[in-house]
Image 1 (spheres, protein in one colour):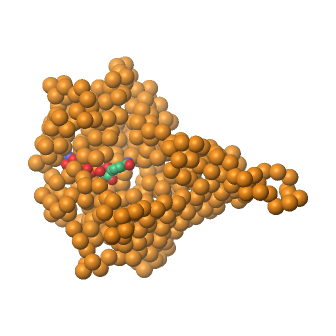
Image 2: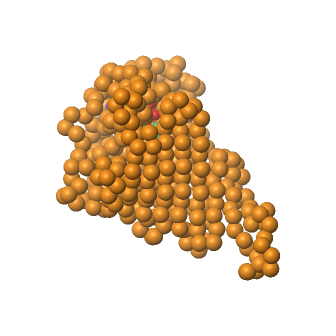
Image 3: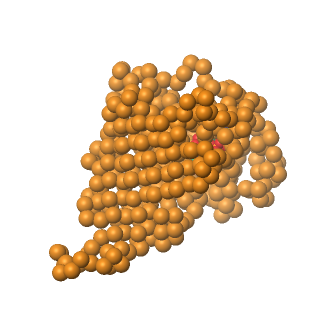
Length: 392
Ligand SMILES: NC(=O)c1ccc[n+]([C@@H]2O[C@H](COP(=O)([O-])OP(=O)(O)OC[C@H]3O[C@@H](n4cnc5c(N)ncnc54)[C@H](O)[C@@H]3O)[C@@H](O)[C@H]2O)c1
């Protein structure tokens, strides 16, 4: 392709604005030309609001619209879709059929039938695609990927995140207009977010897939929030325990919670292989492994079995995933994309399988069967009455 990649964005909320910032930098570097910005609410397209992310944005040079048809009518190469996952209304399928390369934010849908339809449209159109799993571009997690590739056999990953319920962001979608939470914190609401494993747990789960390969089965138990204890429509469960079984034999154990009145969060992320362990911190990655003659004459000192594998916060992964996607389009190099939509389907199916397992009393759910078997058809369907219609 010659000239900058022409890009449109649908959904200028929290995530769409982060992409706008990255795409604006790429535009300044000559790699991108933004063509259209679309949102369901005109107020989210206010030029002053957008300029906080795209400082020199000139409204006359970019279409701003609340009409998806108007966006599609523009001449462009790629579309980013950053809308709440319960609100898709065929935009991915239509854009794929129109020949646009697609960046679809995670989770690509809350409903597997809908996601399978998107995947088929992307495959049939032959366009490039990525899901929004930017953490695969975080230096800390790349370092683990490289380490495991060097002949280590992964056994297990453990991820614990105790988040504060009040720590959820206020979002940009006017959810109250569509029967959603009045405080616009849709990530705390079950019908809008798909619950916390789908909304947030999908990120560590996708990293585990980056390191270990596909998930084969899932078992889960949740501690649900009784209706009398729900405030502000935040009806997601209190706590979650999920076991992911990988086709290669490793397992992943995920513990999440969103308690009220705690106001602090706690995170712990570890990866174990047959003769080593890594702790993935916010500032670095430390590996624990004894490397000397074995067995050692004396028990080694603690400091001699630990080393810093990676120092730092991992870089700007959102910019990195944008840069890779745009370069993949410009140079027709699909191999630069780390989460093509087709690949991301296993991440999506695995977290939805956790919800299904909990609903079935902790039954082990086979991910492939969840995607295909008649017995799971009812768990794949989108409800007849979607939570909301958009277009304001
Ligand atoms: N990859 C990440 O780290 C990451 C981070 C945050 C959010 N996300 C994902 O990005 C998606 C969007 O989340 P968000 O945080 O930006 O939410 P948000 O509510 O802040 O923004 C969503 C935006 O989409 C707009 N919108 C909704 N329906 C629309 C429609 N039909 N047409 C046009 N615009 C529409 C809303 O008006 C709003 O501006 C979600 O799937 C979320 O899970 C990903």
